[in-house]
Image (cartoon, rainbow, N blue to C red; front, side, top):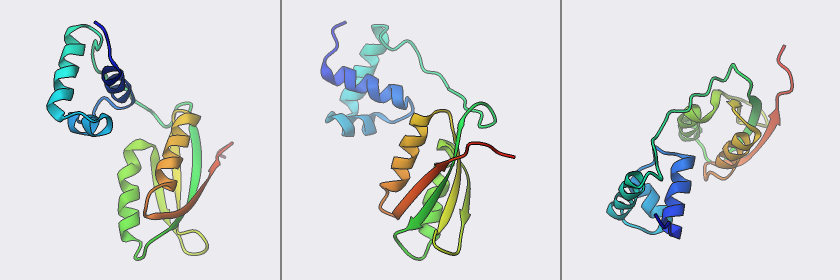
Length: 141
């Protein structure tokens, strides 16, 4: 099967998150939901996509652990804290609301430095966040 750029884009997006919807994929690459579904079906039938699997992450195994210190861009803080809770499936372990110079500290465990960088970018670039900085945990006692 000859793959065009749209097919390669679909495959790249599915490799990063196979659970994203055809609508979201289409929005990212400029195709309709049905066009994306048709292309995925063809890629599956041609054997380019051979299956989907769950990749499990155990934060107690070898991983990159960090603390992310966050300043909120909005008040009251509830909307920001609610949004941060949605990141629990992406490596966020705990969220602590603080008083003082930082509004919150987030404890993170992710499988790689690349995953930490992606999560840092997600947090730092969100409209509810004014500023964040992360510190990698070298040792827990």
